[in-house]
Length: 222
Image (tube, helix red, strand yellow):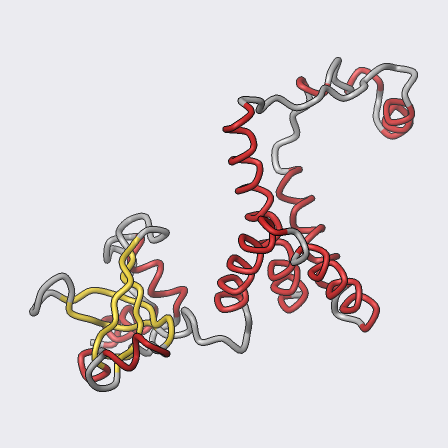
């Protein structure tokens, strides 16, 4: 299930971000963000199908009145898992290559999709090294320590200009780890932690209030 879910993310994340960027740009230029209203009359096929499943009194008068908490999360998970199952076989992979070839043929879409896909493949792929290790680094000055995550090693022109062996790290902000700083630090200045990435994230988000399990176990044994 986890493998299918990650595969579904690898397929949908680049596409969704690409569509979001295009919609943002086009919508800003046109000044049109409204969506076309759905046909929600009692004589439509969708209304008749739903009326056989649930009582008519439960059906909303219009699509704008429809509200089901948690339904979007369930549908999203189902779409991701079904996508992962689909592209895990020979036919699905061929359809995926055809789909990516079509997207890469569109000038503007090609630039956005290829860039986002490269990043998402690095982050979510099980073979990648991004966010696989929790680190302890000195930041923002010597003597101050914080939690960071390994993102890889510098390469290409950047690696040629850097002195010695370096490692790329991401230092998250607290309590919102989605923003942070990308640093390239000498390997000898980085200390690898035994705690998992999930435990390190909890430690960062809680501002040190929620310690990892091994710290709790050691303190309980004393």
